[in-house]
Length: 232
Image 1 (spheres, rainbow, N blue to C red):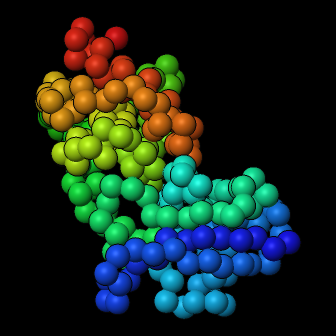
Image 2: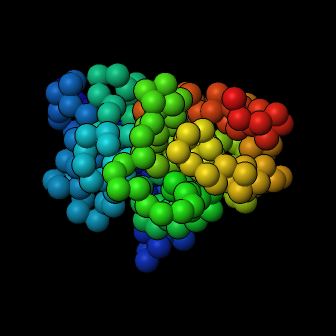
């Protein structure tokens, strides 16, 4: 079956601004959008730049905006996408080339919330144990793959790049509610300033586009409650 694509292209070495180019590929309905993008690069235009790695929805590398909605190209079946398929880089980040964006600021925000377990004292001889109930408390936000779909779908982030963004707050949530962690107070102070959770406007764009189906808006709300009344 023929599939028509419109892709936003930008090459800083030759373009003054981004432009749209049209392509047509012959693929099966059960093929993925990533298959179409790969085919364009391999057979039609070797200068076309995109980012992908595992190609199975685990690494989060191939996040793009498809028909106005963020998604992983490797998880979208062509039969489920309305034609013409409009593909552009995720919004809010500097475009390096075509669909490849600069993630430096995104990972700075991620690192700023201390996304690691904080413990004092000697290391245990074995792993730190956790009850099944305590593990379940953080199971949802622990699924984050840092694809940036949520952050770059957020109008608050578009308006102010200093906003931590949903992905960083999701990572903070995962450790704030971890029964083994001892850095809760410090981490809450990091997400509780004016560029943290309070800038969230509860629009639900982040939840709607998450390829891991994480309840992101709910997690942000739980962090707000923790700031107001303590950990439940």
